[in-house]
Image (cartoon, rainbow, N blue to C red; front, side):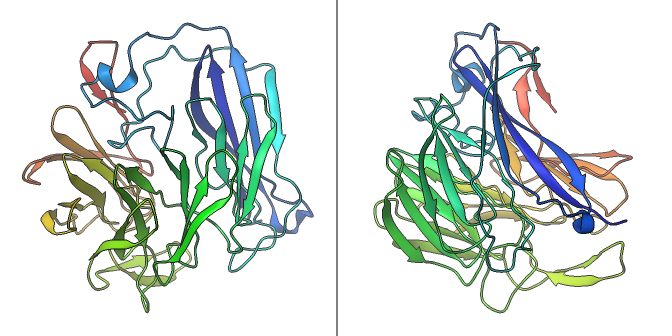
Length: 367
């Protein structure tokens, strides 16, 4: 029997530090069960290292939010220098999405948090739902505000200053007041977005959105920069014409352009992102002009990882896969895009790597 996956999101709280994580379970579509989103905070007694997470690995100081975007920082390292929680037996609180109807192309039963919770400096939580709603939950597990985008399946939000930035599947970008949820601006910036899970990036003066151009499908075909204050488009970068045929286990094929589940990183006044077959791009943050593009490997047919990580060692790391085949970790030089290593595995690599020291001040490792 075929099944659909629903994701249960947890925020693991220890001391004053949070670590987002996910678990998954499957429900058969004809079982009569709704696939509801579920957000839960767990707390344990545990110590945390005193140093700032970015300072430990040599990055610039992090913005005020504790976990402002997917993977925690603009480098997308996924690193948090804290001792992991060990006792998950009793949650501090749990929070469920109110009963909502899904919209647009999303299946009526697909009502989940298809993404990553973000956390601000006051430990308030921000999460989007496939129903098109965006929520903020306090550190005590109470609803602070809720906002209906009117569309479906927003991507992972990003926090910057006092705003929350989100892009829905119909290509509409929003800026919301992080304290009240009030709409600050709304702009139709693209024809659509990819159909799975993409991530917004934000830094001073720029919000970066992965999007899809008109007449194209299958994933991300362009990257768009807008100004945080009003949503005015600053530049667009097109990933080019369709260049890869995806072959699914069911025998279906789909011609797609380069990106999928994009998670742009912002480093050294530039933006970096991936292609579906393990390629990488670096473009200028100020003007969107290409700095370098390193193509993927022909035998890497598809990966849902979507994200790359920029380490403190001037190296770029990403994962690629062949459908139901092997996986590959690729390493690039940040300055030139030169391929430094291709490490293969006997299983697909379907997640972005994390890069961190094994201990404070210790050797760097890729996970």
